Length: 326
Image 1 (cartoon, rainbow, N blue to C red):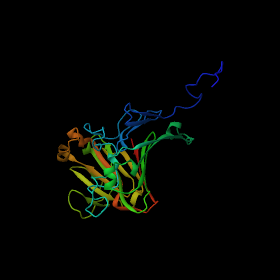
Image 2: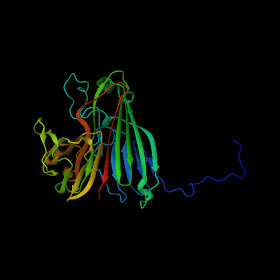
Image 3: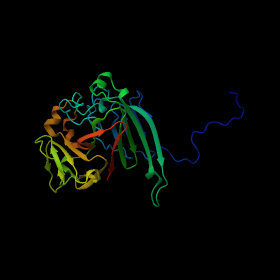
Image 4: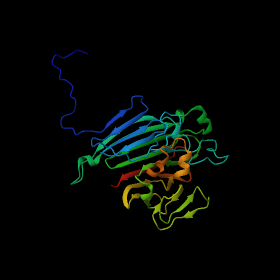
């Protein structure tokens, strides 16, 4: 290229352009962090495409992450938002195709590819701030070709997963698209295993699950129906709710009677509520501190009430949006 004697110097920023979201990789390229100009941030580990942190503009963490969580790819992450696919819980007995898979499947223990980011800033409504409409979306991908040879033998289907994590000033949205790229149908289940951070579980109540049929995984396989009162956590809890109106019912987590989080769902008809309480937490080697059960509550949207059967070329999409209520 021929040099120009008086060529202009590069501009550090476009004049008049408002501050934009930033996306950075960790020094070892194992995780990616997006931050809005207003200070909110989200971090995603490529191992499992696991969201490990979500902070508001003041730096207050909204997700619970065990201090003993394995972030080196040796074990599924304890905390944040692990992804469950293609089976929820212990796999069923043979001859079901998922019978030989580990509990909760392989999505949370696979290395995902970072596909890129996108940002948006729409014209704010009258009286709103421009920052309120600012967002950044991170996309991640996983396909059959990305799996180890051993895992491909355990679940021999061609598939494609696209996982999107979208950060707004007051919300975090996570969505998963499952596509069947095979020439035969397959069954799968999807769940977003979200660990919300709370100040004191004894002060927490949950709205939106009243009069819902549910399975208590600790007691009986027979379906039960919740009462009209808000749910409170006073012992080890592992319930799978199917809300009467499907995914249209929001779930609100309150603390001391005040809303803290509102979880809305798209095409995810079930909600798992889990807290290990004292004895279970003490028995999990990667659950630290042992008293951490007092500061976490899992509210997990999913499609796990039955199997989602995808014919060749079909796709399934499910999403959750967590809103900060205070």
